[in-house]
Image (cartoon, rainbow, N blue to C red; front, top):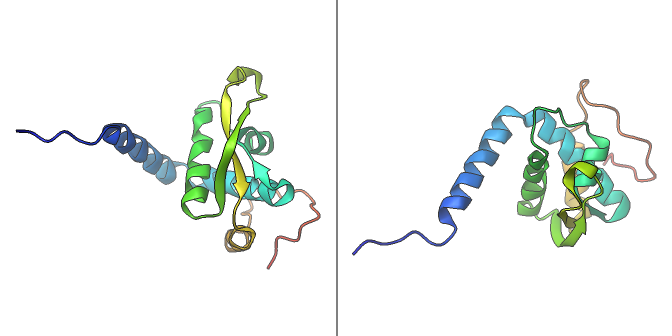
Length: 134
């Protein structure tokens, strides 16, 4: 008698492989998007993919789904947690639901930003009432 893999195991394995490939090939863009997501979350208490895409231009040859790696990593780190859904405001997204992420650990968010300062290729962060330097 053969054992079947758990339901969804193949899909999760494919997703994880794709995310790992993105992490390797787009590390700089992921870092820039992660910083943007954290700044928005620190400022507003919540963030979604549209917020990140409004701040960081994603090259046309990269799928908009790319931003999902940012939220997965921040959720796995306990910095953000999913708090529901919000419809996208980008016309190309056809108002599809996006995960809405709430800030779970402001100290960890600030620590991440301090440990990953902008590089010369990154745009300078916009002036913000929060002081991100620790």
